[in-house]
Amino acid sequence: MRPPRWLWAPAAAAVLLVVVPIAGLVAQVQPAQLWPLLTSPASVDALLLSLRTAAATTVICLLLGTPLALLLARGRWPGQSVLRALVLVPLVLPPVVGGLALLYTFGRRGLIGQHLEAAGISISFSTTAVVLAQTFVAMPFLVLSLEGAVRGLGQRHEEVAATLGASPWRRLTRVTLPLVAPGLMSGCVLAFARALGEFGATLTFAGSAQGRTRTLPLEIYLQRETDPDAAVALALVLVVLATVIVGTVYARTIRPERVA
Image (cartoon, rainbow, N blue to C red; front, side):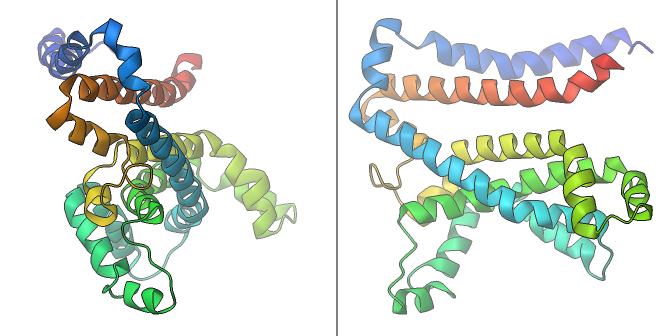
């Protein structure tokens, strides 16, 4: 069924609201200065650190978020809805508040951090803190994506495997996970993208030290004060990366509809 034609007007306004600011950013880029700005030591350090920490964050989200999403989708226990709400809180929490929560938990005088500090382990204002902050804000994206995929799958395939004598582990690894692999991949990509753009929690919990905690969003923020052209060039890099990542996820999402 074709949608009403009047929907095109607000839809076009929504597209313009997103595209025009990006076009304005691109218009500020000077092509001749782009390469020198992007290859400066500070820019390279920030970009490499962002890619490393975002990759580590994605692996942690995959290892921890996958079991959580499976339990939320298949488990039944008291307080499950409360746990789901708590897991999703970072989606709506201001990033600075998330950074403060991490600081008062893993900081040198924090709830857990004071014990770690006594054992000679310091987390705050380190690269580990960057990964922890990114994981805090990115985990819900993987959990939401995978939980939705598992719920949409239903339990018929698992029940058939159970009647054939497959153990719970074999049903999980041979039936469930392969069938929800696209949803799992989308969750990983979204978690990577969210980690790559994280700013507030990272600045609050990890600080801004070049080569150690200063990720690409932090470098853009600092360069804006001293070198606006470099800030625009780095922002363009983030826009390109985000476009590629979101485009990849969207292409995987609509592919089944085209086949149908």
